[in-house]
Image 1 (tube, rainbow, N blue to C red):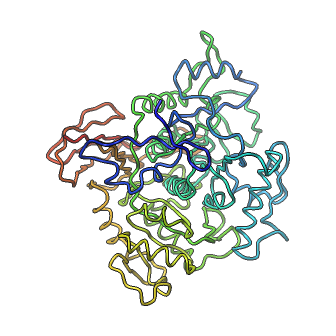
Image 2: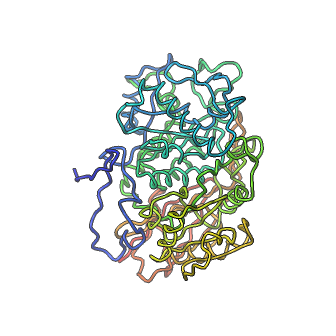
Image 3: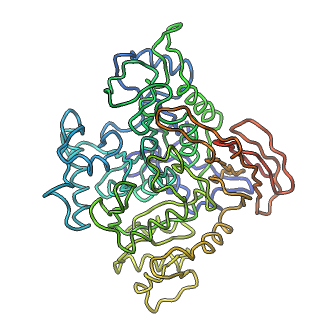
Length: 544
């Protein structure tokens, strides 16, 4: 086994292999170790099929079935010291005023965001989040002195960084469920993992509206929940979201309660019969095992949010921290995210539409807080400040040093007051105040310099670099819709034929679709490929 280094939280970093090729990770990733983030386990990436106890299944047979079908792994690599509320503590914090339906370790949690306990200021809101996370932590683990590492997995509200600020070491985000904008959650979770140097995971929940995918009759969910093979999300969305998370660099992708959803309760030859859900897991595991080296995800941009952003996630109007009306800075962040992933902010009730979107900018962004260290800031070719930012003297010095070292600092005119009299050719200014309408040319220009590919039409794309090759993930999110209790509708006319062109100087030796196991014809520096509605192609470009 290769020797791993260990981070300050005790997790191993992935090994960095020396390059003897013309395509090198170090040419596209400024700090390979920090941007890779630590791993949950020495063996590396994991497709995790979570097992939960239940009357319809026996745990030992579930484990045997997972092993027999090769539908992922069932050994949980993540720390037992954690805080979570069904993987969505942000929602629990704001939507359980009397603790109803909110359980931790058999104890009810009381929401401290309502009534007399409601925060009066944004600063107080952050403190209440910290207090709530620690309260959850203590009730689940019995003591605040439980050994590190600590794991926080959130969903809905994009407050992931506040767990890092509260002292947690590992991070995750729930997607699926009734959660908006999965690409935004990837950017948040990868960003918090990089800012606080911990491993990260993505969890897909099969809930959709008041329904959940199930292949057993007695689920125990109650009469107000619709269950069945046609309930919950489409298998197409499940597969797209998990592949996106894998190629975006997550250390673990988890099928929430997948050990139950993957199987029918009938036993044949000592194992359970596999379901359509389980077949997706088999496909994911097969791909992960065939291609264990995903390379590193290139993310040229850090979106740096104000410390007290409290961003809205798609519930009951725009309110920072669920309480404070949006100001100009908050609206700026809303508009910026909506520019990058159009329509993704509010998708509840829209039947899977826009939870993942095709776009012109790709998934080339991480999200940090304004207090990110100099070392982390310097990892990014470009930084976009956003929100109602008020920079301290130390932070101003940090951002000036970033520009002086060659980073492109993208400043809205509203922030020039913090840099009065300071001039640097790496500072890019745009306006009007708190408006992002004039950012298109700036983002496109930097992408052209940092991403060595162009794309002929809008599609979701992720670019990874390995020593010797690039991997380009193409996801066509158009043409698939599913109501919570009906079969999915796929509009095959939404297929896309896309030309991907390499803009570098090296000759392309070959290109193959490593996900669909197809060779792709190279014409000069371009390839053209058709991606079906809801389809995925993962292209590996190898260079001579």
